[in-house]
Structures are given as C-alpha cells and as structure tokens.
Amino acid sequence: MSPILTTMFLGLLLGLLAGAIMQRSDFCMTAAFRDLFLFRSTTLLAALLVLVTISAVFFELVRNLAGTDSFALSVLGVPSLVTVLGGGLFGMGMVLAGSCVVGTLYRLGSGSRLALWAVIGIILGSALYAEIHPFWSTLKQLTSFGPQAVTLPQWSGLSPWFFVLALVVVTGLLILWRPQAFAPLPGWREVKGYIPPLYAASALAGVGTLSVILFGRSLGVTTSYTKVAAHLEQLLIPGHLAATAFFQMQKPVIFPFVPEPLTVGPGPTFDGIVVMQYPLIVGIILGSALSAWQLGEWRWSAAANWRQTSSVLVGGVLMGLASRMATGCNIQHLWGGLPIFSVQSLLFLAGILPGAWLGGRLLVRWVLLEKC
Amino acid sequence: MDKVRIEELNVYGQVCPSTLLLALREVNRLQDELHRGEVQLDIRTDNRYATATIPNAVRNMGFDAKVRKEEAGYLIQVCAARS
Image (cartoon, rainbow over all chains, first blue to last red; front, side):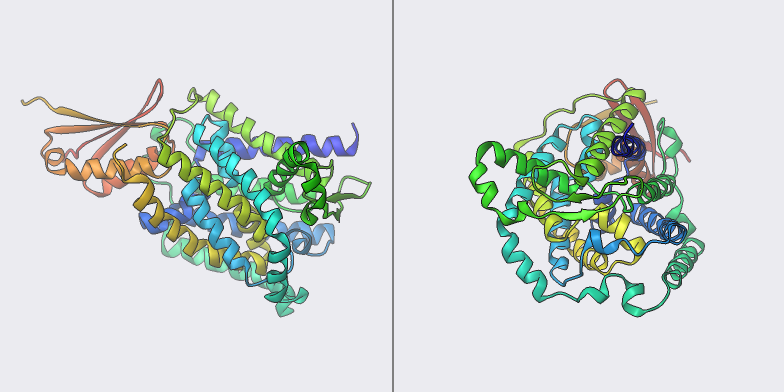
C-alpha cells in the first residue's frame, strides 16, 4: 500500500477510536463551556484540563524524540487579537447548535437528526467566510502579534518543559484540592458502556498524540467543510469559485510517513487535507455509529421543532464562519493548541468563554423555553 | 399505602441542554409531591449525557434517581429519597 493510503487508513482508525470514545462518554466540548454558565457544572471542563495536561506532556515528548520544531505555526498561524472575536462567535455558534464541529460528527453517527442541520450550517458558514476573507485577513494583519509570538515558549524564550511542568503542577494541585471535581458523577455505572469524562479525556489525549505522530499535528476537521463548500460552488457557480482568492490558497505540508511533499488548502483539489481530515471525519461518524449500534441504541432521533432546528442551523453557520476566522475550531485550539501553549489558542479560549455565555443566554431565552 | 402517581416527561431528539432544563423544571414543579413520595417522575430521553447529569442534579436536590435502558433510549426515574 502506498504511504498516502497507509496514512489515510491509520487516520481512519484514529477517527473510529475517537468517535467511539466520544459517543460512549458523550464527551461534549460545548457542554463543557455552556454548562459552566447554565448549571455551574465544571465536570467536563475539569476533564478538558486533564486532556490538555496529558497532551502537553506527550506532544512535547514526541517533539523531542522526533527532533522537530514546534508544529504550531503551520496549523494555527501567527496570533492576532481578532481571534478573540472568532473564538467568541464560535462559542456562541456551538451553544446554539448544541454541539461543536467534532461533536456534530459523533452525534450524527449515533443518529441525531439535528446534527445534520449543523453540518449543513457549517458548510454554508465556511462558504460565507471565503467571501469576507480579504477583509478579515487585513484585520488579522493589523492586530497581529508578529511571528515571534506563536507559542508562549517561543515568545518568552523559556523551554517548553517549563510551561509543561507548570501546567502539570497546577492540574495536580487542583486534583488534590478538589478531587470530587475530577471524579466521575456518582451512579455512572448505571448506564451500560458509559465512559466517565476523565477516562475519555485521557484516552482522547492518547488519540491526539497518535495524530501528532502520524500527521505532525493534532486532530482537525474544519478545512474539509470549506472543501465541500468549494466542490458545491464548482458545480453551481464555477466562475465565482475561480474568482475567489481564498479558494486558491495552497500551503506546503509534510507528513512524517509520506515521502512526497503535499499541499493543503481550501480549494476543491485532492491534497493533504483530504489525506488527513476526510478519513478522520468518516472514522468519527462510523466509530460513533458502531459504538451506538453495539450498545443497542442506534436510531434516527425524532425531529425537533422548527425553533430548535433553525437554532442548530444558525449555530452551524456561525461555527463554519468562526473556525475560519480563528484558523481552527475548538478541537484544534483546545486539544491541539493549548497543549503547546499556542498564543492563538489562548486568544481563542479568551473568546469562547464569553461566546458560550452569550450563546447560553440566547438559547434559553429564544430557543428552549417554549412549550415542547 | 397510597398509590404513587407517575408523571411522564418525554425529551427525545431535542437540542442540548433541553433534557436537563426540562427535567429540572418538572422536578421543581412537582417537588413537594416528589418529596412526600406521592409522585414519581419518569423522564424518557435519548441523550446519554443526561443519564449522568439528571441523576446527579436531582440527588443534589435530595431526591433519588434510577436509570434504565429502554427500547428507544433511557428511562430516568426520579422519586423521593429513601431515608
């Protein structure tokens, strides 16, 4: 088998694994932020902190063993202040949609009909971004921190291990101080096949590490939606597609186990994004579906009312738009960027918190509290 | 002994966090009768996460909860805590 096909096959396995874990645990990164504000619940945020801490240790180990540079630049880009806005819009979008971009994939796999509307929204939002790309890149450049500030270690000149150890100490102290915040909710064994968030977080940090070994970068899926939008434009409005600068962009990429150099870009071509993200997406949907089927709970969910359906669609559009504005979705930033102390990801985090709060207010006020 | 009345709440296929919000609203509405053991609330959902959050939330409010797998999803039964 050619190295590209092997890489794609291994990517599919990673997706299957991630999809099954997220379905079993219902490891929802939207709930993590939303429920902090709506229910004062920190269960999933605590799990996220553990995921980031374990990933930080493993990513840095892999980087040291492989002898590579920090992989933040190629993926997350030079930090700029407007990423806070992208993060905010994303946070609002994911709460309105009921799950984030990766969340919709595992929910879709387990039969959620609403998730399908979110997927349509994300594709629309990605197409929308292509239209505002020139304006947004100018804003990004105007508020840029400069290429010396991609990660905290790089910016400060301190060793990455300094930050990794600091994070390990902080997380460790929090676990000692508030062990019940990290423990599974009582009664979790009542549901067959349930994986408590903390265990899921550890397993997903493992999947992320395998992704870093396989692709030289952490898990990501959103550029694929832009590609789907590009394919649709190619069918419907090919002249417009050719005239849109955003879709012509291509950057070189090197995967550790693929000898030939590839490129990645949002245009409708076979490139590194197809190699890396398509199998992952298919894997997450399939892994979740198989897991749900094995537990005897796979079925198409009932249709929701129009209010909820439109909220999910609008949330999807916001997520598609925002993940391009912020050069990545929450999974890329929180699971991939925070463990390497990417400044861009910290800015995203600064935005997603108020965004999720606002999304929660809108959801409760306008979408849910109607008689169902 | 008086018969326990069963109130039903079906939350299928809805956007998160409807399940928990609606469940808490029902629990609040029925809380006096639930405490006295006159009512049991049966919540039916296809949301796996709710099978962890609802029992946790109602236990913190002083009730008892049981989760059971059903054909179409999960049944979460909320009743008075046994002392």
